Image (cartoon, rainbow, N blue to C red; front, top):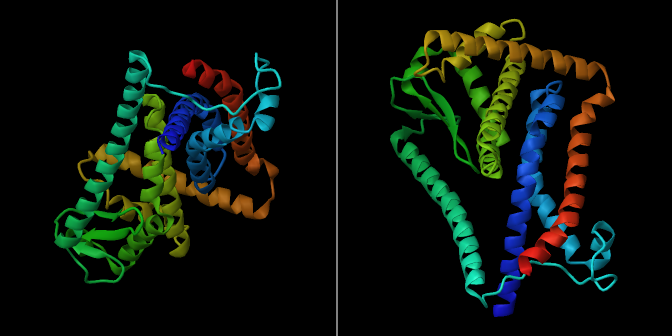
Length: 321
């Protein structure tokens, strides 16, 4: 039993270390991906960004599997003293010396702290959602009404998201405007955008601050642009984009200065016009360059696996020595 737990712990620590290193490398190469995504639509950019941030842990798993099979790992590692007698490589952390005990204890503390943070966030999210349900009225199958004079509408929940609309907003909207808002929020719910953002949040948790903030904001913008596009298409408001964005912007402009609000709305209108243009262009042409983000991500992932195996081999040996 102790041997099994020890092996699991060694693999877990090895996976954590490789994931951490790969995450930093992916953070440094994100500007390259962003440059490629500048010519893509929000749907493709959103998908590519989420896949991109989830590649480090996936690559670390594959790298550890390869390292555990010497026949697969041998062609990818540098020549070393084992020659052809290379055995499976994992991280072997003992507790024979004080240094080893401190190292093991430190790793356990870090992993436990991270798991505690994630669990705490999930618990608080569930509590907030429960409070919202208690304070709101289920007077429509499409949304829950919460008594508030503010003009707000949002989608809450990770696995089973629900739409909440304030009474103040409901009173200010016409039937047509309400339909636009519901389509926008329903799209968030169908796409599980809250869950996607949660995954991206923790996948970039160790990234440098500026890059982390940048990719999270970009992903949030992609999500909004997608929902704006769906609302415009379903309501056939291609020629009334300003009115549509005015309606949607009225649900999230609390606390913003008028100048900031107007600037934000202009950017959303411009982004929506771009999305409509890109969609029309993609439907009339089959340009292979549209697949460039996917090719780039596949190449980066393959390179990251090879790099993780090549450098992970001596790294695990050094840490185990």
